[in-house]
Amino acid sequence: MAVGVGQVTALESGEAPFDAALAARICWYYFKEGQTQDAIAQRLGLTRKRVNRMLSDARDTGLVQITIAGPVAPCVALECRLVERFGLREAVVVPSPAEGTDVRSVVGAAAGWWISERLPPSGSLGINWGGTIHAAAQNLARRVGQGNTVVLLCGGLAESTAINPYDNAASFARALDATCYYVTAPMYTETQALRDALVESDPVRRVLAMVETLDLALMSAIDLTARSKALEYGVISRDLWRSLREAGAVGEICGHYLDPAGRPVDHPIADRTIRPHLDALRRVPQRVLAAGGRHKAPVIRAAIAAGLVHVLITDEAAAQNLLR
Image (tube, rainbow, N blue to C red; front, side):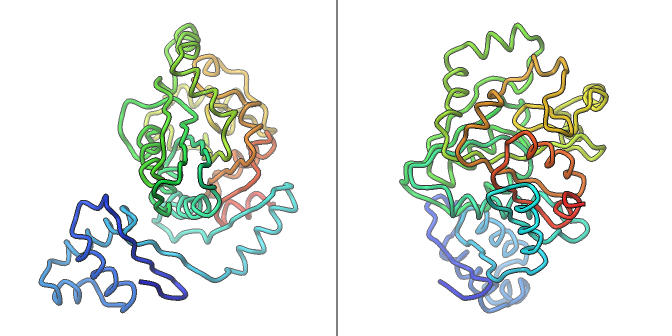
C-alpha cells in the first residue's frame, strides 16, 4: 500500500512472528484511514492491547515503514549553518522531542532512514554502541540479498540491553540481511596485558582490521554529563566517570575518550579498551555521527574536532547549542 505525505508503506516480511495479513489490515486502518485503536479492536474482534502490540511489532519487523515528507524550515536552516560552521558534508536536524520522549529515539530514527538511503548494495557498514544506534536499527528499510556487511567497532557487554553492542549489530544485520562481524571480546578488560593479548588474537585482530575496508561508519557519542547512559547502565563506574572528567574528557566515540578539542585524554582506561585506532576511523570514506540532546553538544563538538564526522545527524536542541 502507498500513500502520499506521511507515507506508510506495508512490506512483506518473512521474519514477522505474527499474522502478517492481520497486521497489515490493522496498519491500513490505523495509518491510512485514521481509525483509533479502540475502533480497530471492535471492528476486528480483538483487544485494544493486541492491536497496540501488533502496530508496534509491525514497525519493529519492517512490515510497516513510515516516511514523513516535507521540509521543516527551522531544522533546514540549522542544517545549513552546521555545514557552514563545521565544514561538514551534510547535516540532518530533526525536531527535538516533547518532554518525556527519549531524544535517542528520534535521532536514531533519522539515522536509520539516512543509512537506508545511503548504504550502497554490497556496502560495508561499521557501527558502535548506544541507544541511538539501537533506534537506528529499528528504523532501517529492510533489504534482502544485497550483500551488505556489518562490522562492530567495539567490544561487547555481558548484559543484553538496548545499548548492547552485540544486540545492536545483530539488529542491523537482520534488517539489512547482512553478514555480521563481531569483536569477540569485552569492551573493557581488567588489565592492559589482557587487552593486548585479546587484540593480538586472530579473531579480534581480523575484525578490528576491517575498519580499513568500510564504506561507511555510523557512530553515536557517549557523553560524560550527569545524564550519561554509560553511567546509568553501569558500563562505567562512578569512580571511572569522575576520573575521566577530571582528566578533561567530555565523552567517548568508539572507545576513544576525547577532550573538548578532540584530543584523546591521558587516562589508564585507554590501555584497557578494545577499539579501532583513531587514525583508522578517520580513513573511513563516510563517517556519520548520530547524537542528540543539548547535553551532547560538547562531545559532538569534540568528535568533529577529532576529524570523525562527515555527516551529523542530531536534533534542534543540540544543533542550537553547537552553534552558540
